[in-house]
Length: 398
Image (cartoon, rainbow, N blue to C red):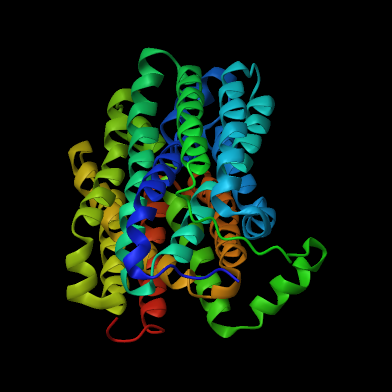
């Protein structure tokens, strides 16, 4: 059983969590870098943006599917240890994507890189759940998520800039190099003896299906997983096409598209900087409700935008709203099954990212049938009742 480290002892965990945030930075950038690259990849391989979205859906699909294995591996061998191993594999698979000479191969390599990146964020969250008491966990998760948010910002903004300067292949080489540097630091920290890497030696991999089914018998687990699935489906189904929308609807270049998409990361950073106020002043219930309202406002503004300059504030609003809702959801997920936290968080990530792949695919079909604006309007309209429904399951304070 993983035990939570007393509050007095969490100071030594901060360094390890900072390195995990760095790993989350590059793994998230790897997944989200596809957003600004869709128009250029579509042009190079002679397909529509919906066809080129395979570079997004394949990574998200693998990210979700591989969670089935990483949760048990993290519980059995140590979450920090598994993260260090897969980060090295991520460096190779991400850099290899730069060599793809056709869309099918690129999609396959994106699938592999999504699968290797899949361990980092959920196992990091589970590690934080092991070493940080619940009372301070949401604030610590928000600090950890700063790395993830910066990864979104880097992947979207810098991805667009690189697409203009060096083409889409260059960004995959840069991400591969970043993976190598961060992996070296992870191993140094692990070998220092400072890392509290909880292990459950009696994990039996043959018992996984039964353990997952047992978790699904718990009503709270089903509620959180259903909310995560719907959130991933709707939000990232819409977010993935914001770059293509800005390029085709307003004629913006890839650098400008990347900078506009980076506003989502800025919104996330704004949330992370003010999280103490939100947690203390609002409580989880009102945070989830306000997050849903901001998401509806942001996507509604995108759908109705008559000029490109309306997009940045709308996307910042989406960023703040998403992290208010998702951080609340994620914090509750850390407490679903405390005795098998790695397995539980991996199940959470499985639902969240598998639904993203489905959302991107379906939103692409909707765009080809009705256009970008109706799709964004529908996404915003559905995210609000989702957030209100989840908020109704939370206590009024805390």
